[in-house]
Image (cartoon, rainbow, N blue to C red; front, top):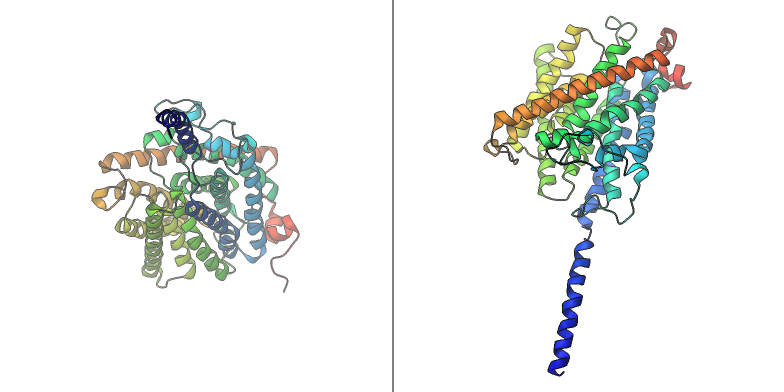
Length: 443
C-alpha cells in the first residue's frame, strides 16, 4: 500500500468511526440477566394479589362471603390492568413538563403522552440507560397498581355492592393512586421526589395510600350488621395462612424487583425483607401471647404482613440490623393498633387494612429515615437523621391528608349517585349469593 493510499484509508476511517461510535451509543444492549429478573419479579408481584391476597382475605371473612372477596380481587386485577394501559401508566410516569425544583401541575401528575402506550415497542426502553425493555417496566408497575386498590377491599369486606366497588376502584386509581405514584417515583420534578422522600418500593404509594383509603371507606360505609357484638370469626384460617405465605414469597419480587436490576441492591433488599418479616411475625406473636395467653395463627399471619409492609419503603437503603428493628417495632405496634385501638375507637376495619397496611406503612416510612443512615448500618445517603425523618414525616402527612380527602369525596358522591352498601337482607344472606348468585361451599 502506497503512502497516499494509506493516508486516504486513514481519512475514510476518520469519517466512518465516529458514526459507528454514535450508532453504538444510540443502541444500548439489553442485559439479559436484568431482564430475566424483572420478568420474574413481575410475576411474583402479580402472584401476591392472585392468589395470595385473595386467599389471605378470603379465609378471614365468613364462609358466606369468601367468593365476594376473591371476586373483588380478580375483578380489580382486570380493571386496573386495562386502565393502566389506557392512561394510568402515562399519568404515573410521563415526565413531560417536569423540572427539578419547579412546582407545577406535572409535579403532581403526569400527562398523556404515553396514553394507550403510545410509542411502546419491543425495543423501547424506559430511559437511554435502561437495561431491560419498557414493556417489562410497564407490566411490573402495573402489578403495583393492581395490588394497591385490592388491599382496600379488606377494610369494607362483607358489605359493599360489587358495582359500587368497581366504580370506586376505577375512580380512586385515577385520582389517588396514579398521582401519588407520580409524585414519589416519576423522578426529578415529582413533588415528593424533590422533597427527598425515601420510598423504595411503596410505603407511601401502596400501603399508607391503601390503608388510609380503607379507613375512610369503612367509616363512610359504617359497621357490618351485628358488629361488634355478633361473632365474626374467620371461616378458614388455612386459606389465610396459605395466602400469607404467598404474600411473603411474592414480596421478594415487590422489594428486590424495585432495584430494577439483578444487582447488589436487589440482593440486600431480599435479605432485609426476610429479616424484617420474620421479626414482625415473632413480635406480633409474642405480643399477643403475653396479652391473651395464647399465640394465634391469625396473629402470626398478620405479623408477617405487617413486617412486609414496614420494610417496603426501606428495603433499598437499610441494613440487616435496621431491618430487624423495623420488623420488630412494626409487629408490636400493628398488633396493638389492629386490636386494642380498633376496639377502643369502634370502627369496623373488617380485615385490618388500616391497622396493618396504614400503620405498618407509616412505621416503616418514618423508620426508613433513621436506618437508611450509614451511621446505623444503612446504605443510603442520609447524613442528618433528624432532617430525613422530618422529610419522611412530611411525605407521610401529605399522603394521609390527600388520600383521606379525595377518597372521602369519591365515596360520598358515589353513595349519593348509586349507593355503596348492600341492604340488610343481602348482608345477612351473604354477598356470595346476593351479589354473585354462587356459594363458596356446596356441602
